[in-house]
Image (cartoon, rainbow, N blue to C red):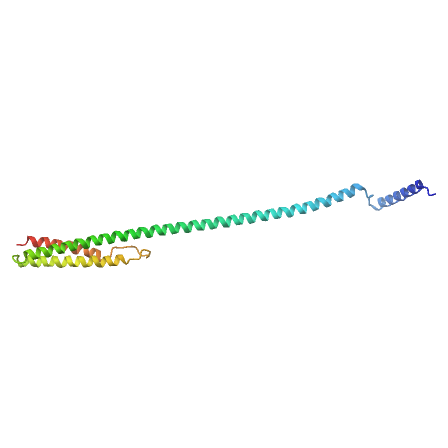
Length: 199
């Protein structure tokens, strides 16, 4: 029969000798506490790496979200600027269209006045042609021609203004014939009135 008690004592003695040899060489006995410490260090290192990776993933996701938001905000700003520019351009074109309409209306009024003045001068010439002096007939005829010139200048200016392209870069000025039509109308009406005073 093998005595288990003696075997255990022999094993303990061998273990004590190996521990003593390790102490003499500088190494300490390997204890379970050291194993748990090494295991804790390993799990701490593994946890630190995992935490660093998760932090990097979160930072990358946040950076991507911020970049996406920044790009969206920049796109919205560009769209708002474009819409504002389009609205300003539409307003400018509308104002220019209204200016063209006003100028055409003014030229039509000038043409209508010149036509009425011309008809009146023709009626005056017809009624006074027999007994009017030569100077009165010449003055009336000159007024008649000036009124016809005013009518033609007003129609010409109206044609130029009507053909005006509203989005053209040049500013809208009155057509050159518009000022001439006004002065010819005033002169024609004045000569027609003067012809009535000449005896």
